[in-house]
Length: 104
Image 1: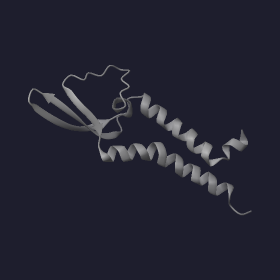
Image 2 (image 1 turned 180 degrees about the vertical axis):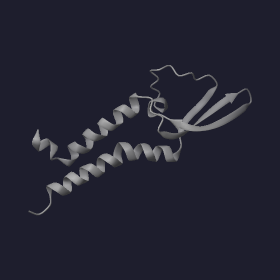
Image 3 (image 1 turned 135 degrees about the vertical axis):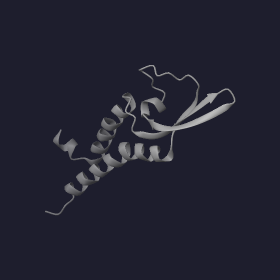
């Protein structure tokens, strides 16, 4: 187990899964998004924070989608999601890599 913790690739994948699981499974409205409502002939775009579980289509809590035509993350929301799921674990894995390869 100790040897596994010293491997940066294991740290990266483990932390990515550990961070992504709650973001996809819980309704945490952290990411910038837009909801497009269709009401007759008019469409209304409402910017609001969305959760990844809502955007991915996992709807455990039965959210009402009356009049909703589309919902998606904005580019800023996508970058934030990538930063959480890939960027943060990559920084920690890089730190483990540097710690393992420092001269003694």
